[in-house]
Image 1 (cartoon, rainbow, N blue to C red):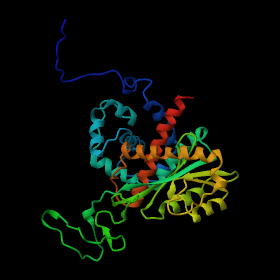
Image 2: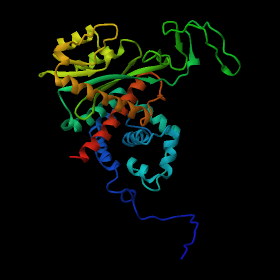
Image 3: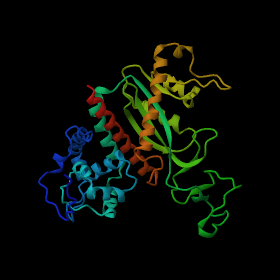
Image 4: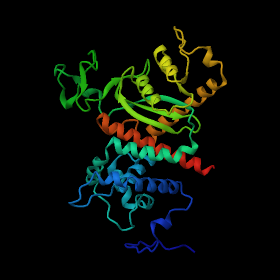
Length: 355
């Protein structure tokens, strides 16, 4: 018998969002970990708010909302708020009741600005790491960097002294034939972004460099931060991250051919770190000799180090970092670290499910 297509204007429900989410939903273990972490960070949040005035959006809800935006590749906060209007899964994860009013997107963005703090992002990242310790190696690591495209167009890259061809109708700028360098030009949209190309033959883009230190056992990120985009930034950042590796035992550090320099390899050896970087023999002599590459551990590191590209791919394609929507190195650094923590949460959920 064919059922009736009843059009219902109103609905009463006695089922909570908690009961509507399946018990085996992949967000459940993440929600539990996030709730525990946010409870530990409550004292840090309290320092960011005044004791008087109108209550703001709870920072815990802001954090959970931002994690959803990363997990589900929601490209804007306006769309995130729209999803919270009718998506019961999103409401459950954030901690909202079925009939609770959703915030205005502008109010949400204004409240989020308070959390754009590198210290807050790093505190969240470190607490995720504490829960991942049983799954991490403390001897074998990989370092790498990736170009993060800035929220600025090539047309905004103008001479610092105000000269150059004036914009045409509609703001069009013809910069063909003009020599443009970071020393003489800067973006009017994001002055801290730098024109940079990651490899020969690739397009030069305005952006920043994001750096990570990954442990090799399960591909978890151990450190993340953002620097200005320049030719030495990757090796300089790698040295800073290598210095933070706990001492007491000999460790290995893998990397691609960009790290194969006499200076970098020599400094690693002086820190009691075995350089497992890929050899660069193109028209030159590699700084990594037979003492290192003859061992089986070197070959393993070369296979494992490619996992770092998976983290970059996830952070860009899923986490929305292919073209970052924040401006300034501090805010971009906050988002990069926070997205790295979200990546670790997903990895940790999968690892916990298999043990």
